[in-house]
Length: 359
Image (cartoon, rainbow, N blue to C red; front, side):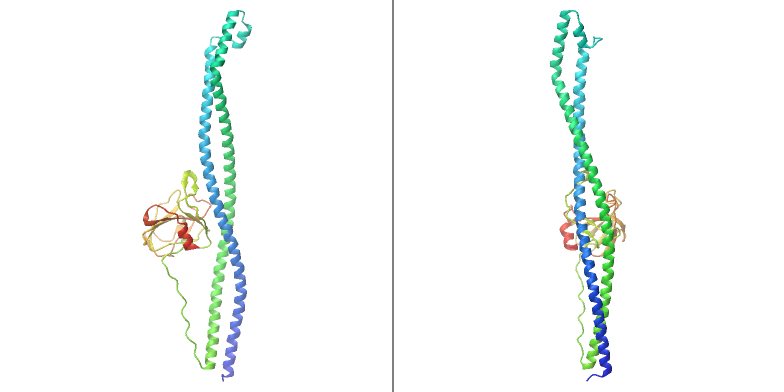
């Protein structure tokens, strides 16, 4: 029979384990709330990613419409001016020798033959210039209509850019909130791991006490499983992305990558092992680099805040290589523009790849 001292030791160990379990239950409830909050934030971030892409597509369409309307307006205005110039030139040619208004000359003339000649001339003038007048009126009407359409397009573009600014402001707030929440979840996870370690230690002590009391030994615990694999998600949490491959962009471009929205300073990781090739700063790409993977593929990372490894550095999958920024033409929208070039050739849609890696 175990001694009273051993029974007391066993009881204390079990009480400590029960206390830790109660604290863990309360922590689990708090963690559940935080995860629900993160899920709601993630939904807003995903919706913002779709909205911003739609706005950028509409902006590109409106800019293209404006270029066409401006060209049409210039052409119609030219045609109207040319027709009006022809009419004025004919009037001056017919009546260039008259010092008075031709109609007044016709009405006040005393010579019947002269009046008949002038009337004939005016009739010929009207016949000759009727077509030119119709051309002038039609061209002027088209020019006025095109000017109205252009003004409407400019107004819509201004409104679209306003909505885009509001969406970006909301996105910034949500990204910062997501960043703080993620930090809280990381800290909660650390605490849970610490509680789990303490609980395991208490359970171990209780098991040892029970073992000593019953004079039996417990089997050794199996080691925890370790991760593996040679690929990793290229960006940390919080993040949001959608499939925007081929979507229109300003200047008639098509989108050649996937935009992964994340707060400033979010870690950027090597998607696979290879060489980190830092490139010169670009007006569009900003700070960027190519990862020349050992798998034979090339991966582009654009709009980086800063590089965390040097040019030519050998990196492994999941290694920190840079941080998220908005350099280049991404001002105000921190994100990673990620491209996938199989075999180092042309870009293909990277969305299936990052969806598989990042969930």
